[in-house]
Length: 426
Ligand code: SF4
Image (cartoon, rainbow, N blue to C red; front, side):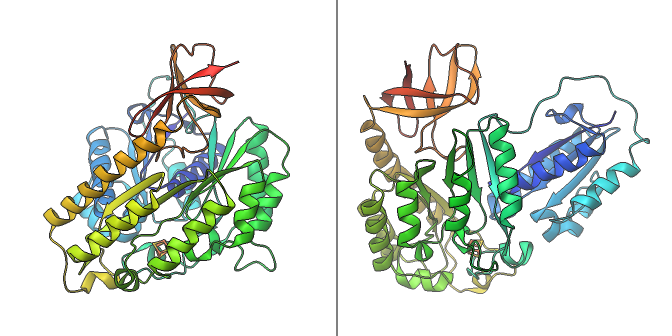
């Protein structure tokens, strides 16, 4: 039997795309393996959201290319869609290039070569995602026009995935023991705009009716489209964790306008106050871009002051990268790399102090935790305030009786900049 692996780069949306592709390929009697050196087909799901993501994708392709003998190297996803021709020219080891939404074509391609590869030795097999959580993509594409972003060109207009498909997928996950469903899309607040009378709140109400002991986490909400009813639902529904990821990108009105983002600093501050009033103890995560064209020292200081004032529990920062085909690409006043780096470092170091302080407030308190990984006598888990892969984690020592996917009670004993340490509580 032929073996394949999928290396996924970029955001959780790509993880979902890879999962669907893996399922489709498995139905054609291929076997999934985690180690690409043991695979007959190496598939790389690429990302090109920012310069760093492009570089990471190209490095992964080059690494896989070195091990390519007797294997097929297939590259797909955002970078492949955008720079397919350039990639095949620069990296001739690539056998095939596909864009996004081309799962059937990829599978057909693999079937053609099923019998033309040399049989490799037997290996052990692994699953692609942990036993504890799954991302569920609730929509594809984006109809907003942020001036720095290539996503609408690559992924097309916003389309909601129908509720029956989402609910069926969610139910299957919960029945198989998954403890956390993480809803993702480019912007989940838009969910349902193309469905009659059914929106994100309707979907959440239906998801919470699924029987089982599981959490629901919401990632990527557009700041100005979060309404009071949604916040009340998050506050009152036990299955929805008190965690909201709201990318704001900047705080200064002039930069927000140039970015093509809706809302003002005043409105953002008002929204944050409303969220914290309605959901006490909420963990707020946001992401910001530094070094956007024309960003002055004054604009940057305004952003730092905003971050200090809000004291986000979680925060991510990106250095602006110039993307061909975007409106911002041609803007005058591009910021030199050394200034972007200094601004990035400034915010990250301020945030590590805020994060440590917030983490210290959790010491001696008890929380529910989900166990993601176990290794000998250490376990890695998360509380409601940790989204997997982007936030810190909970580290548990002497945890040899814990199992992956288990939900436990824990007492927090130590705090670090981003991670926590705890012990299980009986
Ligand atoms: S909301 Fe803006 S940043 Fe997010 S995917 Fe859409 S266009 Fe890009």
